[in-house]
Image (cartoon, rainbow, N blue to C red; front, side, top):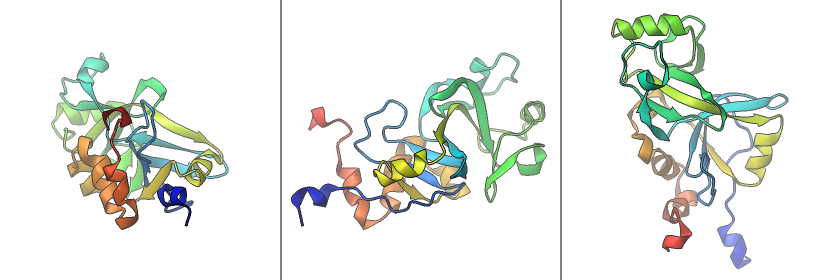
Length: 196
């Protein structure tokens, strides 16, 4: 085996699906995507894909960003480089919010914002069941699979409990660890090779 071949990172799947997470390879040097975990909200190979970075908390709360929002101290996360001025939300409230779309069993994307505001005002929607993101991440048709071919991402699954209970700052390393032995080296790569 060629010595360089030993360090090639191979994708564990070329078949992404809605509800998967994408875990960035450790050497990706990008403000948005370095050490990122992206929840795939939708994937249709012939049309494209979009998702939300779920592990990059910003130094802001939602009521600071949206003027006509109820007083709500929920954190805001960086969702991706597209539409960075737009706020999106993911929740576990299901049919309580009309027009929301299932991502995985028990986890939903978006829905009627006025209903969300009412649920916040009544305490039904809270920081435990609703998260907010500025921007999103998107790929044109075929682009995501091309990035997988070039080993930019590993694909895994996530449960609602993992989404809600894994501290965002530990998501990348935790989910890399769950990929198993072939990916052990990922967690040993320094974040910045200048520090090495």
